[in-house]
Length: 399
Image (cartoon, rainbow, N blue to C red; front, side, top):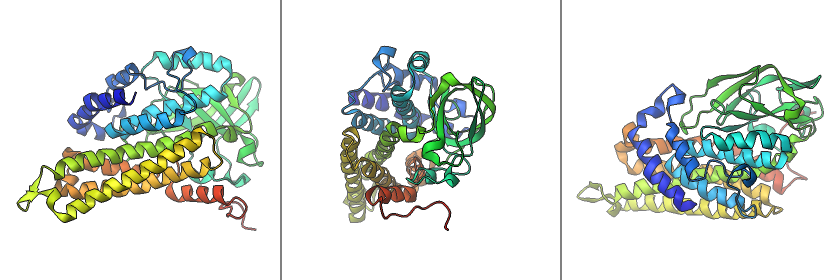
């Protein structure tokens, strides 16, 4: 599978990204990434990972599933981190639905996902009023979501807004979280719903034009008196607690995508410094260049080591899995940012040129500091996992 991904990246993804660098800056998101790329991803079997075999998906050995996700997402992100994000949302949401969705919803939606190579999934948590700060292990009413679902005859009426949603602009199916019992805290009063794109009352408000990862169309959604029938309720009340099957692998995948950017930085940097001549000799013979390249390689290998340990912890449901997966995500985002900076510097003025393609790696790396929790929030989570009895709440009334 890894070899198939490598061939896909080298023969399809990288040539397209390099030849069409201007498309990244198009303000018409539908045309950024051609349909053929997702068709090819589907052909080699990496679009529907996590979908049960009975519905035509590619089901992995669950004993090593997270590690496999990490391996593949790193390789796809080596080609383009935005494409990797498009695909991994499908994987993570498929795992969520496989574990939580009732049989009738699996029978309805998994076949549609498998049949259509352009079918994308999205997970809708973040709101304008709160994002990664809400996912700390505190449970105060002040942190509850502003998106509300009120029970009515035969279902629910949902009002609210979600923003910064990966695949949000062009997904066909959304998992949406909403407060269903105000005042009891997030872990007891939040429910999740499976919402088709064509649902009346759902508006895809805009595509968020991001600094990096621009081949994944991040979106903003608005719900106005949207009716959802009871049969599309996923989990009532304790949906966040049950979503750990999404959150834990998600941190690992996030770190692995980041690692893929770092791996690409090393590829282009080592090629450049061994072929570009300055001061009468190739760059790598200059000591300052050699030191930078060595630093890049050490940081990438350190990230890979921690990621491997965290992947095993998640797959084994180890006691320290929460702390380790947050460590891997946070450490990768900070270290690969430094790697990307070195990469730009080693290319000198060429590193700043849009058509050279190196600055894209720097922009993509910068995005990871804010994806799937900011670095500061990740560190709060680590402390809460390690010292649950004494760590601060970080939210709620001061009195």
